[in-house]
Length: 381
Image (cartoon, rainbow, N blue to C red; front, side, top):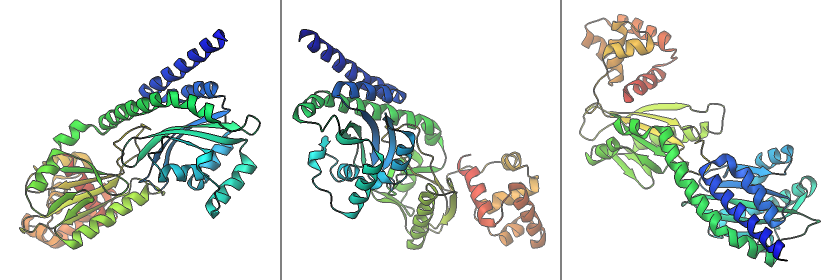
């Protein structure tokens, strides 16, 4: 008996240590799951991250002892109708969840999942431990047992509770490390040095990051308002157009046009030159545990604040002639083609010819697409 107790302590300590190892290095979650499975007498296990703000919800899923096809089907649609996943999303503060808490699931989605599970998955019983990392982010592990081994009883749940506190701490540590890593990937120093206002939004359009320029621009009271529910302009029409661009960027995350971006101009109440606005989808962070889960980037360029890049900057970037670059700079500043032609002392026909050359060299197919490229170049200059 003494040997068994010693062995149990060793397995428990090894499991706890593996949680903290995984917090420091996310590639080690599979080993942590192996240790936890052996400790709890489980046949399979998974590590997951849920985002209540995401349409797909299940952002990360690492598993052991499930066949590849089962996991593909689960992530391909069955996770969205899984009663356990739905319970976790509805009860983010339930730290430990097991089959006995779910009751009898009678709705159509649950029946669909249970029918699939009966045909496809060898395991039958589940025990889940989770922690709530932020208002919408949850993470945890799930243990799975076969019908032969049987359900998790009160003793199993008590034993799991002993290591769950360490799991919570490890997940919190991992989230902090992942958030710092995500910021490094975004190059925070570059964001803070940018002459443009940079805002990162989550999947619900809420601001999760803004640089100092964005704070200063809002403080001017010149038609930009950054609130808890997102970014707004003084003009109702401009705000509506911005929301459309954000919605398009979010939609691109789920479709073939990933990274698609849009541009617009936003008027200022004072009548001074309009803001240039650039909106694009963000790539998913490589860290599973990160509180900095940005989905959309909004860049707002203020003509009064930025220093116009020299013509040679655009020349080098797009292989333009000096004349083409000069016209491009005027268009990017908000001038119409006719106004730019007058300012440069050339005919409207000549300006049109140069605009056609700009289309060819930047591989743009419309003036709005050209403005997107020019505003992008200027915003980050």
